[in-house]
Image (cartoon, rainbow, N blue to C red; front, side):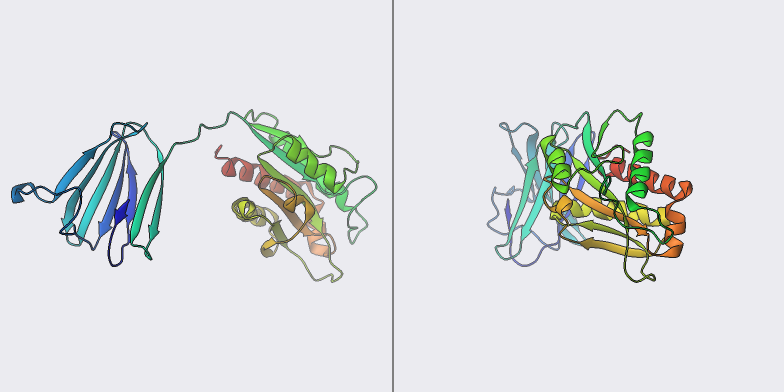
Length: 286
């Protein structure tokens, strides 16, 4: 923890061999009453260190007047192994905190629940040529399943694999009961106006936004449709699930040009590939 007066714009970098966290504080200097005390011998410059013996990774904290152009104080945290950190700057109290955080071990396998919307007695929207949304949703989901068949680190669980209808609560309860790491529901959209078209991605909880943004960035180029952005909406499957949860509306069944593409193998394959890439990127498997 560092106390300061005025303003500060810290810059942080991590280095390895040996592991250390370096915090540069440009535009500041040591206060006259800085503690721990600086060396009294001018030849030694403004530098010092604190040995640490009771931490799992931190071995020493070093501090020095690092540069004069611009005037910069450098603080170095020497580590025995790589650790994460969190930097918090509170200008109101003039406090800069560097908190070390133990890295979490990487999981051997992640559980992802993939939901083909609607199904069975609930066909979903009807397309302009009489096709049903439930069939489109399932076709994409089964393509994702095939792509992930040889991915040992993703345990893919489907809410349905045929023309059945799990209720919304069934889908939510499945994901929650197995403590899934991620949930995605796939849909085709519809609107009373035949001119509305495009791809959109829905989320509700704050912890779902990162996955929603990543998926949307991959899905829009895959469809080639109008970008309708990421939207926050109170849908049950993204509000009642306890893990990051997103609903993808691939395109509009009520729009002639969208619908023509939605029921092609080529588009469905591209969307499935975009979904798989999003899973792997979000879970840091690629």
